[in-house]
Length: 203
Image (cartoon, rainbow, N blue to C red; front, side, top):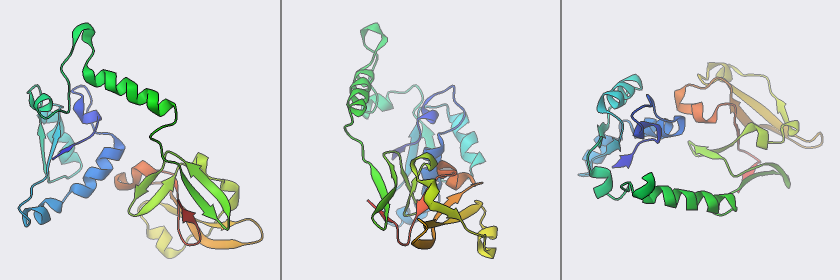
């Protein structure tokens, strides 16, 4: 059972957020394997069922996705709090406390990409996709990345991949970084972000 996407919790929104939709793409099809282990996957959102079904059809999802709607499910399951006096909820208070802690630097994890002892990227807003960690472009020292000519395989990539050599003018690591310049929905969360491998160490 999973809570699918902040956008799908709101009845006035018509689609899920890109990141949650990306992870849901990876749920698709695993229900068959789970069933062989006496396990079921169900996604639950508070949005109207009609909107959930329309979005599910649009993205060709096959797993079960139900709506808790105006039922007491969220309260009974402990993932929502009922309104208190003044129109606030316990969840609102906890959210404010969490935002305060985050603003003071707690609960964040900064990842760095290091090449030949040089930090070439650093961010607390990275995303791991398919086993590779991607960095927002503005957190990468793009001056150390040199565009490489596209190979036949690159040209066939549906996400518009662009590889880069990592170089400082003295040393060079061929095609050690890449970016998707026109990604399909599955890779949309890392649109134009930079991924690394080969000689680049991620911590």
